[in-house]
Image (cartoon, rainbow, N blue to C red; front, side):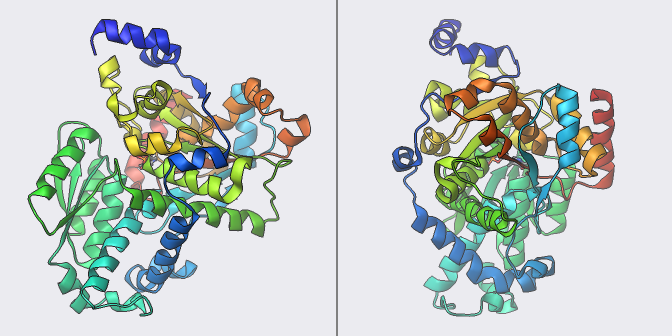
Length: 445
Ligand SMILES: *Cc1c(COP(=O)(O)O)cnc(C)c1O
């Protein structure tokens, strides 16, 4: 984009100017509709989510044997929902803003196998591919006990195939560990942001890691190209994959069950607010889709991005989706939130969610570190910087009362609200690395 085009864009969409200035901001989606009106843009439905849910259930006996840490939950990879009242108080004090309702943390940070939200979509798509190969080869039926996949016979069968993926770290970790365990040859194309420990861990699992000096978009493109040269190679396309999206979407019904177990209602009188850190969009997009399908219009979904990587906000606000990158408007895409260091959003997710997403906001790395420190101090919970992006959401929603006004919420409804911050990663961060994060948090506070 030349300076004139950028000027034109900022004139038409003033939010773009705020993004270029790297200011923390919140944007409420003016094209927001009901689920009924917005759903056709997604192009997927409840039956697709149930298909994914059932596939994960078929694989549960396999996961229990291949990854014993999943046995406690019978091979279902799901995270805890915990209330964080001390953090809620601390946020109120820090930002001088009352947070109406109850604050929760969804601990995807501690999901088994790979310690991030990618243990949903990433693992699901590998299982999808493995099942298809085994069914097509006549080695498996849908009625079988899938534990049999954890045998040398199956590993030998899968070793004829390869899987490739581009990643800033966590998706590579999920797909790498899962694919290697099944017996696939797996290559992860890692962007410059990826942390060293993630690469080391993958190599220890026998995964081929190719490193790039450039960002996520370049790593994905390189992965896509090399995969094309090998007909036995399946490329997991984080920018476009419906399978990944559906793997994430299963979270909606699961969360509904967790809330029901606690006698927590979600309805007109008890709205639910969910805050999701966003990189390329597949994770938060899939989860938000699942949430809308589970709770209808009573759930309000917000995405959070670093001020230096606001790709989804840029794409949705301008309607340009993947036709524009943050770099094209002079933003550097450099952030310590490595899981969110994406300059160009998924066009598929942006278009799918353009009417169902309630809003997006941005925050500085400095704020991420502050929140990281606060959560550690108040609740003794340690997450990686990306995973804290959702934590500012409840403060912002309560502060920007125009949102409540837009939905005609009464004081009572706001008091009944539940706010869920999706804690997307950090459970496997090595101690030394976490000590560094906490040191930066101490400076930021
Ligand atoms: C990948 C990731 C996200 C965002 O998921 P996308 O699908 O890239 O939008 C958020 N937080 C963490 C820790 C991640 O690894």
